[in-house]
Length: 71
Image (cartoon, rainbow, N blue to C red; front, side, top):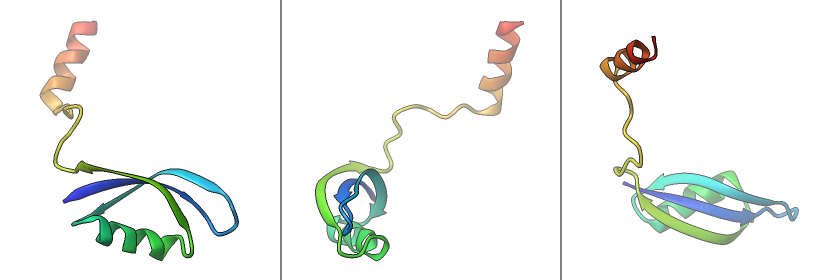
């Protein structure tokens, strides 16, 4: 599944950046966006793969070893 990062302008003129929505394609993500923000104007959209993790999450063993190193 893809993750889309939208920047938009609401119908009352407010700008909102970094609205993250997952969807199978751009049309699906934009449909979900327009359910939350009716009559908005999309200013920018970037897509990333939601399965890619920029940083690895720590598991409990990593956390315990980090605490042990600090003592």
